[in-house]
Amino acid sequence: MSQHDYIILSSDPQLALRWDEVTQPNARCTAVWNLDELDEALATEPQLVLVDARADRPAALLAARCARDAGATVLLLGPAERRLMLEGLRVGCQDVLHPLHPEQLATFLEMIDRRDLGVLYAVIGAHGGSGVTTVSIALASFLARDERVALVDLDVMDRGLASALGLQPGFTARDLVRSTGKIDEKRLRAAMTRTQGGFWILPQEEDIFDEPAVEPEELPSLIAALRHAYDHIVIDLGSGFDELMQRVAFDASHVVLLTTQDRPCLQTAKLRVSQLREVGLQDDQMHVVVNQFNASSGPGVDVISDMLEIEVALTVADDPVTAGHALNRGLPTPQVAPDAELVHDVDDLARRLLGQPPVPERRSAPGGRSASWVC
View (cartoon, rainbow, N blue to C red):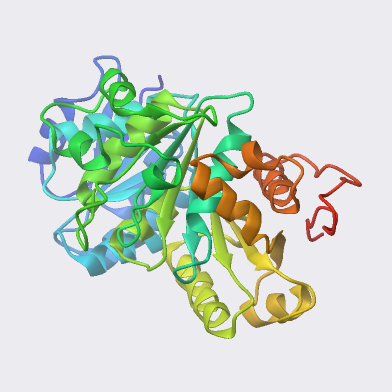
C-alpha cells in the first residue's frame, strides 16, 4: 500500500481517530482541511476518500466530485436525507454514511482491497409485465455457463423469483440482512439456494407486500458479500424507481432497462433513462432492451431509439409460449427451449454484457428470426 491510502476531508479532528479503528496497520490515513490540501493529497492516488458534508454541503459535494474525477472511491458523511443521497450519487459518491460506524467503514475497505470482485447487473422494468423476472432468470442461466452466478430478488412489488423457479427456499434476503453478525461469505453461501440452471438465488418473502426486503442502509454489506462470493450478480429490481433501486443502479456495472413497444411503457422508459443519468450512470452502462418485440406491430427499433434518446441495445422476441412453459415447469427458458428465438436473444444480451460478439447466423425455432443484436 502507498503512504496515502485513505484521505479524510473534514473539520472534525475526531473523524480520523474513528477511521483508524478499522484501517489496516500498514495503511495511512491523511486528514485534510480544504480543497487545496485535498488536491495535493489526491496526487498520491488514494484508494478511498471520505468527505464530511455535515458543515458545508456545497463545498463537500465539490470536493467529492474532484476526488471521484481523480479515480478514488468516495464516501460522503452526512445526515440521513434523501436529497443528500441523490446529490452524492450524482457527483460519484459510492454511498452516504450516517452515522459514521466502524463496521460500515470496514465493509467498504474490504470491497476496495479485493481486486477480484464480482460484476453487478441490475435488471429494471419500465412497467410491470416488462418481463424482468423471465429475462433475469435466463440471463443468470447464460452467465452461469462458466462462472459462479447469484440471482437476487429485490423487486418490492412482484417477489416472484422463487415461484418462477419452482422453489421454496428456507432463507430470504430479509433473513440474511436482519440476522445478527456480519454478512460474510460463509453465511451468504448458506443462505443461497442452487437452481437447476446452475446459479444460486436469494429470494424475497412472497407473503409480505409493500415492504422492502432490504433497506437502503443495509444494501452495502449485502452487495459487498455477494461480490466477494460470486463472479456475476444479477439483481431483479422489478419496476419503479425508489431509493433502493437508485443505489443498486449506481453500484451496478451494467443496467438492463426492459421496455415493451407499448407507448405508456416507452414513455416510462424514457423517464427511467433520464433518472438513471441523473443518478450518475453513463449511457454505455445502460442497455435498453425491447422485450416481447414483434416487428409487425408497434414502433420499430429506430423509432424507439429516437423516442428514448438512447440507442436500443437489442430486442427479445415476443414468445409467450416458451415463457409460459418455463414458468409452468419452474425452469429457465434456456433449459425448456434452447433453440427458441427468445432464448437466443437473451444469450446475445449475456454476450453483449460480457463484451463478446453475438453468434452469427443463428438458427431459430420454426417461424422465428435470427439473433436481434442492434448494431
